[in-house]
Length: 266
Figure 1 (cartoon, rainbow, N blue to C red):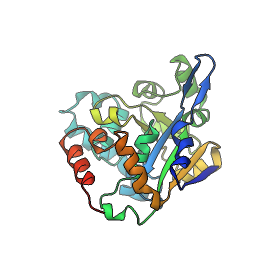
Figure 2: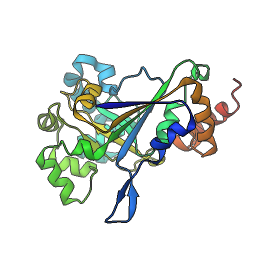
Figure 3: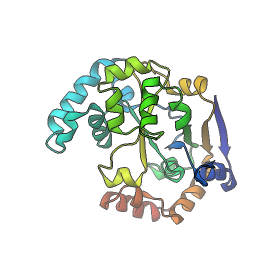
């Protein structure tokens, strides 16, 4: 079931920002959630591959990856060894893939929920931050995948771990069906991935409606709706906390977007 929470004031953000699980074995607190912020609450959880190729995505995905790898291998020869590396590098540069972007930081999720290509739209609609539970999702995985997690003493898959159990998307799709998905931590190939605390969910081909899957198979999924009248207030708070385009997109492009928004006249 998806729990829906409307954020109408800053106090409403506190559960989103501070919710952590106490680990008695470590005497520390840890967060097993990942977050996805979107600027419009009407936007659906859908991969770029599904948006781009629609009902032909399963047929076109191999050609997309093959052609990307053929030309991109000059930049990173290691991608020829792993289809998951191909997807991650491609996703990072705008290639349509089955990966869905998440972040381990709720503040980064809020950043993406409170930005617009046209800042005039900030007060025209609500935005959203999705939160999913990694441990809950991974508990649904086939035993072979769980064994790899246990062997590596972790709850998160790396590229090498995923490649160990499913070297090809066809194997992954056969294993997953529409019943589960892997949450993957990408290699730190770029400062942007590091600063955004990036994670990906690997969506199996049979999972044609991600939100329906979460509604009927999870108990810890939360959808935080940021009311439109709160978006600028949250935005200003994030800027004060140094969570902005300058950090999320290291380099001159991010710097320019941050300065432009800083001097935007409402």
